Length: 110
Length: 115
Image 1 (tube, helix red, strand yellow):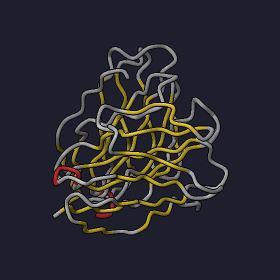
Image 2 (cartoon, rainbow over the protein chains, first blue to last red):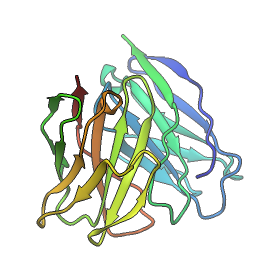
Image 3 (cartoon, rainbow over the protein chains, first blue to last red):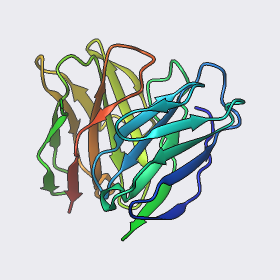
């Protein structure tokens, strides 16, 4: 998997947009960027993924830079329930596994 | 929304005992996984399973571990002789047939405590 780098922690005020950055400068052309989150000790939850175009779904938006060396996950209106650890993963196409790093611990502040 | 179901949610066992953790993946998924997370540590890959056989396993998945899909719905992880260091959350996951799709669905986990 391509190495990803995320800040260890971030705070965001409730109702604001939470912007979580990820660097993946060694990503190769066919490797997607995936975002998962883990709320407390629950199982990881898939959020969104993308290759080179920006993506949006009901949970979040994903902005990938043109050179694909970094991306930003955006939670447009953060709620207290978005407090979680967020993982940015770029799995090697053909690998069976996801490799989780330490992620970013996002705390939503009331 | 389809879910991956894991049972039990919490299992306490004595060291040296065998445990079986159970999972019901999403019905039309073809790839199945077990991960674990020791308290305060990263989520770690254990094993992947496809077409009724192990497709990849980690160094953690030694001879004490085995997986099985005994029928069309269940997917189990067996630990033959548990050790204290096996205490962890164990997560089952599944994903659709599209090999390039890493949008896994994880279960809510089984907390295994070895005493």
